[in-house]
Length: 348
Ligand code: APR
Image (cartoon, rainbow, N blue to C red; front, side, top):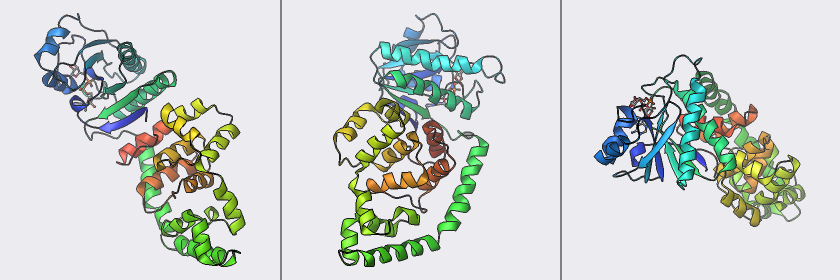
C-alpha cells in the first residue's frame, strides 16, 4: 500500500526518513520533537544548530544518528488559529516540502507524525485528511511508501457524524436484518440449485462452485448465487484478474489511474495483470472495487471470483458495505474509518 496509517512510536520506524514536527528554532522541544531528539542522541541537536532554524511550512534534513531511520526531516507546522489564517496550505506545504527532500535524498520509505495535531492544536481529523490528501497527490507522480504514524488514542480521526453513521450501521441495521433469515434463505437456494443441475447432486455443484460451498458458511445476498449451473459456470469462467481488467476498460480508466486510486502499488498491479489466475488478498479486491466504484453486487461478484464473500459477522466487511452502499468510494476516507475502528486498511 503506497500510503498507510499505522499506530506506532515514530522513533521506532525503520524507514529511510522520519519527519519531525519541529518548531522554527529546530533546537528541540516536547512531543514528537522531544522523542526524536532523545532517540537520535546529541549529534542530532549538534547538526540542527548548524541549520539556522526553519520557517513554518518549510523543511530541512539531517542525519538520523541513533535512530533506525537514515534521515530526519524537520518541518514546522502551523499553529491552529481557527482555520482562517492559511493553516491548511501551510500544513500541506510541510508534507510537500518533506516529500521533496525525501525524494531528493533517494528515500523509498518515509514516516510522518500528525504534524501540528498536538501542541499546535490542529484538529486531528482535519490534520489527518491534509496529510492523506497531500501524500496521495504526491504518489500520483512518484513511487514511495508513506506511513502516517498515529501515536495516541486522542480525539476521533474521522468526523463525528461519519463515526456515528458507521457505528449505527454496524450496531443496528446490517446485523439485525441478516442475523437469522439470510443464511437459511441462502441454504435453501443453494440446495435447489444443486438438485436442478444436470451433473447431478450437490457434489457436482460444490465441485464446480467452490466459492458457493464456502458461501454456505458466510452469509451472502441471494443474488450472489446463480440459479442454475450454466449461469454459475458462466460467472466463474471469468477470473478475478479478467473481471478487473474488463471493469477498468468499461470505466474508461487507465491501469495507472485505477491502481493509484486503489492505493495499490505498480508492482502488485503488474503481477495481477500478468497472471490470469492471480489470487489477491481480500483487502486488494475491495480496494479495486472502491476504485472502480462498483455496486455492492458487483463487489460481491469480484470478491467471489477471488474466493471471498462479505460476511455480516465481520466488522471490517460491514464497514466496507457501509461505504459501498452509500456510494462513498474515497479510499482515504474508507481507510481513515477502518483505522478508527481498528480494522485492516484496504489497498495492496
Ligand atoms: N511518535 C509518533 N507521533 C507522536 C509521538 C511519537 N513518539 N509523540 C507525539 N506524537 C504525535 C502527537 O500525538 C501528535 O498527534 O505527534 C503529533 C504532533 O504533536 P506535537 O509533537 O505536539 O507537534 P505539533 O503539534 O506539531 O507541535 C509542535 O511542539 O514539541 C513541540 O518543538 C515542538 O514547538 C513544537 C510543537
